[in-house]
Structure formats: C-alpha cells, structure tokens
Length: 83
Image (cartoon, rainbow, N blue to C red; front, side):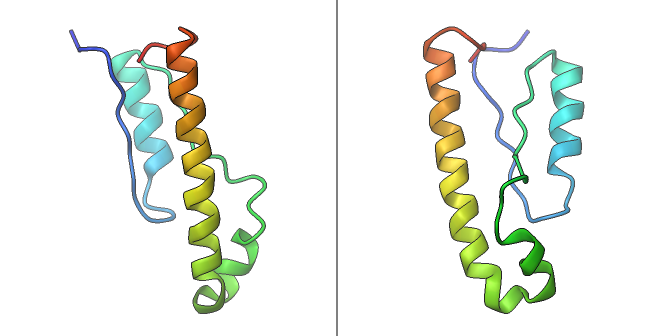
C-alpha cells in the first residue's frame, strides 16, 4: 500500500506529536520511534523560565534529534526496521 520510507512529525512542545505518531503507526502498521524526553536537563527549567532556558533546550533537542535520526538510519541499513 505504501512505499518504503519514513514519516517525520515535528511541532512545538505539547502540540500532540507523540499522540499523532502513535495513532499513525497503529493505523499504518509502522514502528513508532518517539522523542525521548527523559534525560533532558533543561526541560524542568524551561517551563519556569522559557526566555532563559529556551535556547539551551532547543540546542539540546536538536542535538538529540540528530543522534536519534542517525540511529534510525543505521537501524534501517541493518534491516532492523523497515524504512
């Protein structure tokens, strides 16, 4: 039904990315790879002072997403997940 590939979902915090990803994965019989929020050292501070911690948190998230994407590509090339 679908060509091999992947779907990426992006959006701001709390917009429903994880819910949409999980629902799409279930409907399309795909593996969902969700963003990990555990281990983010800035998240708890961000909600208290977005101006001060916003940039640090965004840099951390960008770096984390880059590593996650690299792992995803590796898993596809090794045949561990459909891509």
